[in-house]
Image (cartoon, rainbow, N blue to C red; front, top):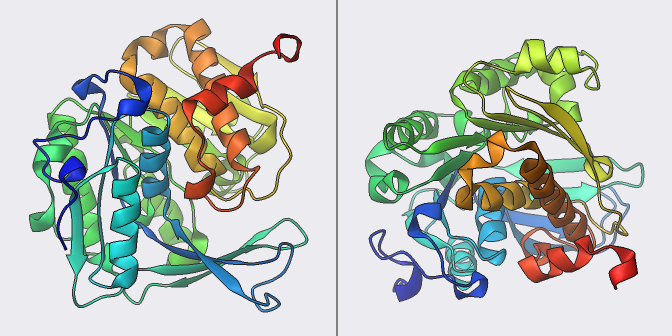
Length: 348
């Protein structure tokens, strides 16, 4: 399959024209899994009750890459899919969204991962994964596009790629390349407990690379899980158990309520932006894409609380817009849509 010339070689980065002129140094490289989500055609049912399913591209790191590109930023995805129809479909979706795909590899011996996901009537998400093993788990260090990783201003990743070898070692190697090249390391654990062998393995695996990140985004549920049941609202819990000396920014997302932020100099809260929620899938990834897009063009945001809170308000609006449509990638907003949502009511 021929590479799209706009998103092929790592030396020739795509120009994303939607956001005006782009600084090549503002590249965000996202590492990890990309998969097919199968979501019920109706809401509020369990997987067993669903009458039919619709396929949608998924995988948190890939969602973040597309989110950044849609906002007018520059992004690349590094990961592995199956040498199958779904794998090529996913790569095409990245290309259509101006995401650099020079780091995408195809495995002829394993399938693209599948996940069945639903939002039940009680508001809980239910997952059923098919990864036995899937292609994303089989990315080898020798397959890494180290050129694209070295160009990253921000290198972003989750924890699913830490679950099994050889992908775990590849993940650690990619982090090392990025760190040595001066990249900012961004980590969203994105806990998916059913994929880990046990709760203890998940906790240990997620925390094993915790102190290497410059930016960490966690949800309230993840705080409770990682601290062994502590109160996620307690600043002392967050600062004592999750903040580490190398961290530039720790963000706690609170769903529609907004987010909290912690840096070495200051901490605070940014309220959410109100919208009508249809599907929360991808909201956290849209938030991450929003804040990383802001940081990629201005790494001094860490030091200026006023500008940081404005960037977090922008990220909150990205998440808020994403929940108004079904699916993650189809719902990721443009910069224009986000800025429109952020305008005060009086001005509209």
